[in-house]
Length: 443
Image (cartoon, rainbow, N blue to C red; front, side):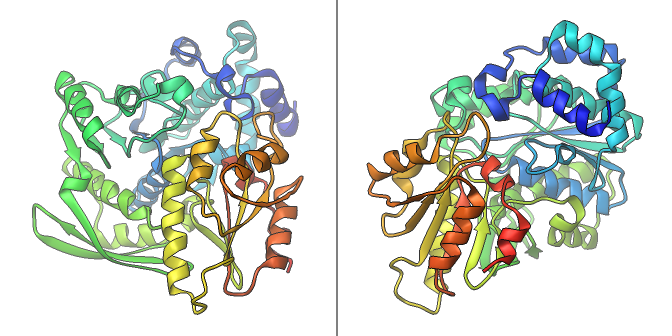
């Protein structure tokens, strides 16, 4: 098989969560363990950092990888899902995995795969581990798929664990309370391995503390150790100051990830960096600040408050759950306040598409009634059809037309928007992944 045939084989033969949902989720680590045993356990042959959380784990993974690679370490990065190219999931120093390696790996594991029938994610995790070992990385940043305790990535023993936050998502798998979800995420905490909690709430803090105590792991709560202030955002940049509460020292930062929510991830990163330095990693301030100002360039991250055009401003964001959408709305409010046009009515346009197994009604209940909506759907089996989303949205007073494709919806929004308006594309990672550059350039 050539590369394209190999990718088609993976999509067709292996259950893929992003396409079919919970049916692809495996509630044990058996297949991943068996695959890695057959590969002589490559995950034990490089250092790793493990990152879980409801929101922010992708951004945090990329920010940390950017710092490490800029500091001179050969840095692997495993994240999911991808937006456009399968190879986005597995990178070293920002460069995607070689096509030839993907082909070779699938061929050499084919007999075992056909025997044990792993999911797409299980095989991809094993592929990442083998690639990082093969390429002799110094360190790999590994993002969980969902959950933590039973996530396929949870066969690693990292040098640091990070849990960004806890919110409502994947409740059909992880549990329907914040405490249950936190307990699943806390499953990545390992014996004697330090852990950083980016953000906690009263319902979750004690769960992390209990698990850390049980594992004799040092625990750090980033929101208690760092405070962010003087935040200024523009279309392409976020400026802020961060105070180290213990040392009473303040630093200024410029981020190219300009979503307001990135300030929470920044606290987490600084807390993690301090631990890595204590472990012997050489990271100076100049390196750290350059990396955080150039995450997109260094790692290729996309879809996080991504301003892809202006006049009108078009923003892509992969927000798809209650907490994520709240954060997007917070930033749209800030933008509209700053806008030269003081009349806020009808200045906001939402191109939105969701998947069936999300809390659709909860998300829709948060959205403003005076915005204009363009309902659409990604082209995957899990997608909620645009007309079904439109019907549900009407129950919350949200009105708009349906479109068969996200690019058609964006073009329509641009035609109906004034130059000072804002168009936000959100609701699904897969929807954002289908946005084409030609659409952005058309008026």
